[in-house]
Image (cartoon, rainbow, N blue to C red; front, top):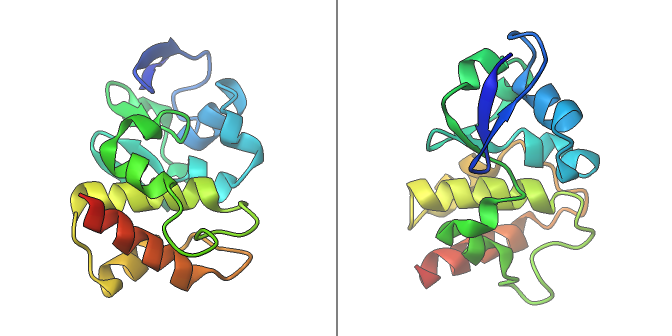
Length: 150
């Protein structure tokens, strides 16, 4: 039975070692984010100081053992994430909130790695996280504002 370090807590899961980390977080550990923005929040898990992107779909939990894994539920403890959670653009960067968890995870990972990102850096880091409302310009503005707070 693999043991994982999720959000600072050691948890042992009774699943095969080849089970994808995404499935384990969503189904076995009942991440509260599992019903909202699974593509962004759960796929954008921060682990061992690196954001894990699409590879999470196939990343086995055996490879995650021993690494610190941070999900949206605990990301607020990180300074870059706290800045990303504040609305920075008029009306806030997001409208419906569907993509909010994933946007916060990706933006906080970007700012932790690159505290002063360019527009190109932001666009590349945020690609793949779909905003149903199309507020990409507002999201970029919010990330730039969060970067200026550092």
